[in-house]
Picture 1: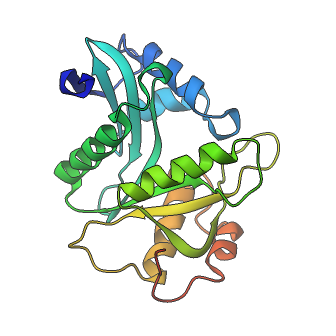
Picture 2: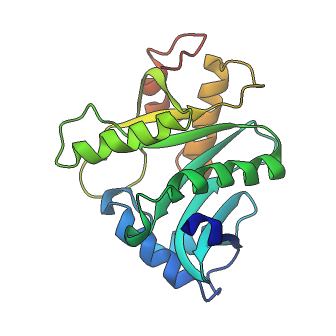
Length: 216
């Protein structure tokens, strides 16, 4: 099985010879409206609060994950994850996901994992793919935050897709409360998307969320 012959490497600079191969998979797998410019991805590679993990087979890059894991916080954001088109449906996505969170746990301790995932409730040309993606994360134990329609603050032409915020919660961590979630959203908006921490979209997202956050 190919997974037995895979290895992982952390990308720490855009000067690494593997950056171009990684970025090619990023462009191919991530829709234009949800992508960041190459210059921003290059800057991320050098940040201490980010991890870019490369999945390799025979020294070739075949997948990656990009995780924002702020210091002194109890959460991380799995911002992007993808496997090369020629290596999909082999179980590598699951392996990459689990390895990514093992890496973050070793680095930060047990934290809640947040995921921005295209909603499968919005009528769209790629709705079957959205359903499969949601099912993939649910099989890994991720659940959606009830009554929160996530507003992706990434600039670009046209409206961003409707999104769900999913949570990968280690069993030893307590339930999430509303105040905690709102703080996380402020950190993400400010440090991941360079938006104000008091962006009005945060209050809009939180309007219907209960004090004890429900995962469904």
